[in-house]
Image (cartoon, rainbow, N blue to C red; front, side):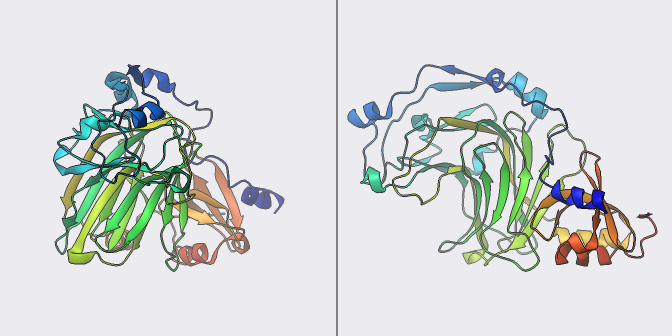
Length: 373
C-alpha cells in the first residue's frame, strides 16, 4: 500500500519528454538577418500610430531565415502550407490580409512552409489609445469563416516548434456568433502546451496538459470541428503511429454552421496596461485546412470497443486533482494498474481515483485481455 500511495504523489512527472532527453539547441533552427527597430522609433516615425484601429504600417522586422533542413530532421517532411485557406492576420497594430502580410514583419513572417510568429518585450495593443490601459496584444493568423455541411468536419493541422516561449493563447476555435470561443490551446512561459475548455462540461476535464516543455521539440496538432462538436489530437512528428486523442467537447453551434480557426499568440484582455514580458518566437509548419467526412471519434470508439480493442491512452485524475496520462493495463478487486507513455507502471487504489475514472473502469471489469494481478 505504501508504494501505491507514493505513486499517486508522483503524478506530476514529465508525460511526453523521454527520460533523459535534452531540449534541442534552437539556435540552429534559424538565423536573423538585420535588426528590429525599437518600438519608440516606430511610433516616432509613424509606422505605428497609437490609437489607430487599422494601422497602415509598414512595421518591418529583422528577417527570420528558417533552417529547413535542420527543422525537417526533427519534424520529417511536412506538407506545403495551405496559403489559400489563410485569410489574414490580426496583429498589434491592426489587421492584414494575404496581400499585405509582408509589411507586418515585426510580428509575422513566412519562410517556405513555415509561419513565424514573434512578439517583443514591451509591445502592447497599439490600437488602444492609452498605453496604461491597453490590452497586451496579439499576432494571429486566421482562416475564412467556413460553413460546414451536415455530416462533415473541418480539420486544421500544423506542426508547432517553440523557439522562445511566452505565455498566451496559441490556438482558438471560433464558432460564428458573439463571443463563441469554444476552447483555447495555451502556451506556458516554460514551453508547456495546455488545453483550456471555455466552459465546464459534465464528466470532462476543463484543463489538460497536452505537451510538456516543448521548447525545441516540435509537436503535431490536429483540431476537428463540425460547428458544434470538436476534437483535438497530437502526435510526435517522427512517429508512424496513429494520432493520439487529447480531448473532445461541444459548444453552441455557430451561426450558419460557420467556424474559424485562429493560431499565433493572443495575450488576452487582461491585465490592462500589460506588456509583452520578453522577446519570443515560435514556428507553425505545414499548416493545412481540409474538409473530412470521417465521423466523430465517439462513434469510432464505440465500434472499436465492440471489436475488443485494447484501452487507449487517457488522462487519469486522483481525488486531489493530480493528473497523469496513461493506459489501463490491469485490474484487481481494489487497484488499477496503468502504464505511462514512457513505460513506467503505476498501481493506484480505486479509492484514490476520480468518479470519472471509476466509471471508465467498469467497462473493463470482465475483460479477459487485461492483466489480473
